[in-house]
Image 1 (cartoon, rainbow, N blue to C red):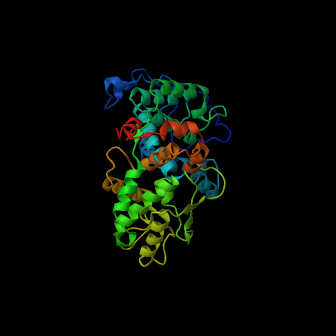
Image 2 (image 1 turned 180 degrees about the vertical axis):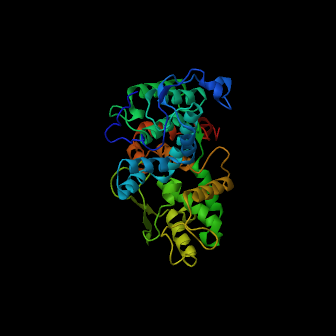
Image 3 (image 1 turned 90 degrees about the vertical axis):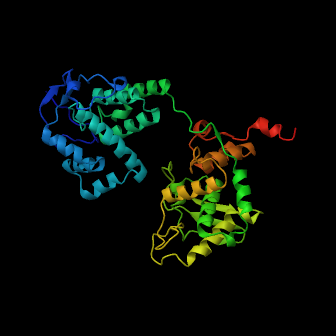
Length: 388
């Protein structure tokens, strides 16, 4: 059977592994599965023309990660090693981790059906995405798998497989049948956290774990930065002058695609116990004695020796622990909820939507309204009737 040439600019996996001749996948192929899915999630075998995977290729495919598969593909196409490294560095670590998980799902599903996961086949891809929908996966999960396929497989007729009109149509139907739901129907009131901070007293009497949790929570509320972005604040960029503080990020924000790295300026608050500038000043002074002379140059370091730079996950734990101590239900609300809580409070206080979108680095008001702008758990009616 004639094999299509890879689309210009696509990723050609043709010669990566020894594959059997093209064959029609039999309709009874599901009978060969060791562990067939539950009846509610069984999908019909994709009755498409595809290359059968030889036992040797099956073993090799199961051993390679998505990035290693791409690396070998680029190498087969004759790209230089420096170019390959740049290609693979094009996605951020969190994106690569999400795509790797989606790749494993795709690869295992294809191998279960005896199909080649490296072949860019529209019918096979649509069958896989339909299988995810039938399995009860959320729209966002299906969309993630669609994006992984687009960035991993070669284009079809010059179109990334995830942008093919039929795949786009399939995703629209998945959205309509199971639209994404916001994680929170309401949010918590930052004023409760501010009151708790005031009750702790002066920063100079706080132990370092409490001081660290307080600072990252204040910065998250004051800047709408994500935990990964807080972790990227450079120590050298911190400037404390009088009643203000300035600092910069060492990497682009999550949705930033162009422009310089962002810097932030904060003004001091009258109440020093809830002032992010004052908290930052105390944190810098408190950690300066323990800060290693040679380290990665980030602001936040671990609480114990050897005081290495912390990751976004650690900062997320600090925020969540502090919120829990302040009385916020962290069984429901994560560290990321600071973005929703702070921006929703800004709306109620009359700050313009444009300024809120800019601070949160949201591309559109639709995204903000759909996923972040929430009423606080103290409802409007309760506020009105409080003194009745």
